[in-house]
Structures are given as structure tokens and as C-alpha cells.
Length: 156
Image 1 (cartoon, rainbow, N blue to C red):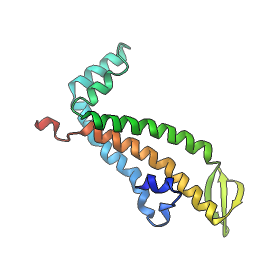
Image 2: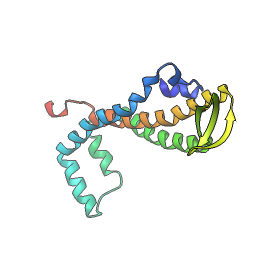
Image 3: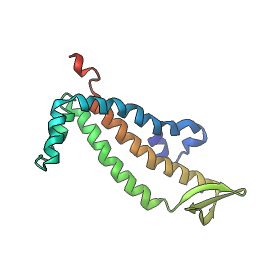
């Protein structure tokens, strides 16, 4: 929802300032992913072969998505590639960081003023900034969901 709203140029951070907690959530969901992968014998063998430079390019996907339905694998990998594309679009369309300084909306780059902007432009840039981050959230949360599906693999 955050990503879709940011694509619609809606600055979600104005109404939901705690939306940035989703950054921390990535670590919360990836800790079980790391534990799950470290228990996986096939993954351990893959890591050893990788150190010897004798792995096939897509063998990692076959290991980590072994019990994951195809539809979820397609969504997760598609989300990953979308995040890369989204990031490239974000970096090419965001000339600086929007901020509110001395009662003015400004666009700055590493503390250097680029230009004074309107309130409408400010919200546009803030929504675009959120779109850049939320694309990464889609990739990380999607990959974690696909790797952990089903969560109780060891109990099957």
C-alpha cells in the first residue's frame, strides 16, 4: 500500500510518520531467514562449492525456493528485479533531498541548497523518496516470505 500510494504521489509520511519502522522490520524478518538457511544442508554445500567457484548460476534459487510454490517464487524474484528498476528510476528522478528549513521548502544535496520549492513540490519529492525506499521493502519482505514459505518446514 505504501508503494502504491507513493506512486500516486501521496506523501504517506505526513499521515503515518512511523512508516519508517518498516526499515527495522526487514531485520526482524531476515533473522529467521538466516537461521533457516544455516540449517539447510543443501545451502551449506552450495556455500562450499561457491568458495571453490564451481556453482551453476541458478542453483541457489533451486535450494532456497525448494518448497516454495512457483507463483510465490515468480512474485519474489519479480519484486527483486522491480526494486532494481525502481531504484534506477528513483535515482534518476530525484535531484536532491526535500526539506523544510527556515520556513521554506527546499531541495538540497549533501547540505547544499539546490533550489527553493513549493509545498506541492515538497510533497511530490517526499512521496518519490518514499517510493525509492518502499521498492526495497517490497524486495526484502518478498524474498523473506518466499524463502520462509512454509515457515514450519522442519516440522513437515
